[in-house]
Image (tube, rainbow, N blue to C red; front, side, top):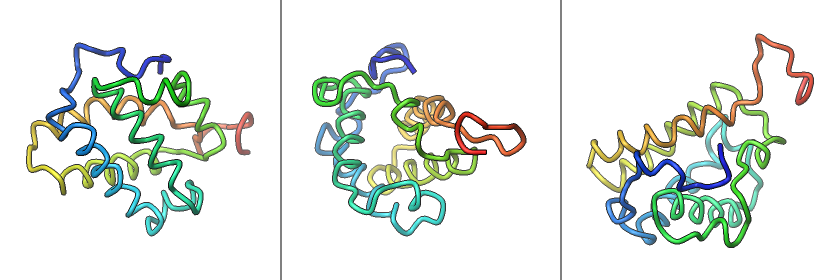
Length: 142
């Protein structure tokens, strides 16, 4: 991913369709409320999810066209680098997407919006994959 969360304007989603910043906060909180009990995702996150919630919220606000909350607080969103210590394979990527979209679905019944969000987040989630059991991941985990 590039350093700008808002770079792909052609596929942008109006932040207001997500309920504005408050709607994004509710969505992110729903997601993180479920993370600790999730068998694949729980172990990837720290016990205290306060910072994770704040970073995800700030990133999504900016990513979906709002204020530059993430960049101003945390700098460029070099997400693959920032997630390098987490062992993320296809199952973890899919679990993240599933839980993220399920959390959004609880907030809105707008399947068109959910599909657009999935299309925007899917490539980012795929880019986070750094573990390939069928290949030698010497740089990271094997």
